[in-house]
Amino acid sequence: MRFKVVRICGSEANTVIPEERIVFDLKRSASIMQELGYAVLDRDIMLLAAKDGVEVSVYRTGRMVIHPAEKEKARELADMFYQMLARSE
Image 1 (cartoon, rainbow, N blue to C red):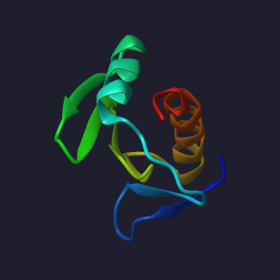
Image 2: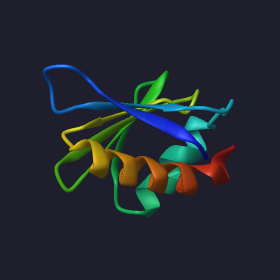
Image 3: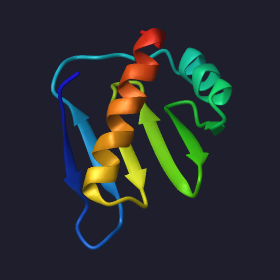
Image 4: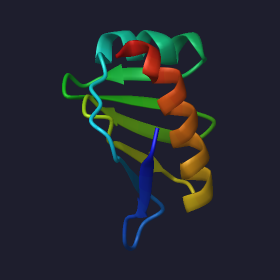
């Protein structure tokens, strides 16, 4: 999956934008993340997953916000999340 990571100005957050069209089943995605040890809150339009002090907001469109993380760490997490959640499409 190709995506770009953009640092949000003045914060420790990064937004991750997929370069291809993707649609996640959020209920299935939540289940996958919980199996991998993430604490997950379902906010209807998005999921908020937390583990090891990092929060990842996952939207149905594949867009993510990762906080706090340096840009390279956000890239690694996004890659892992896209591979993991590809099973929920």
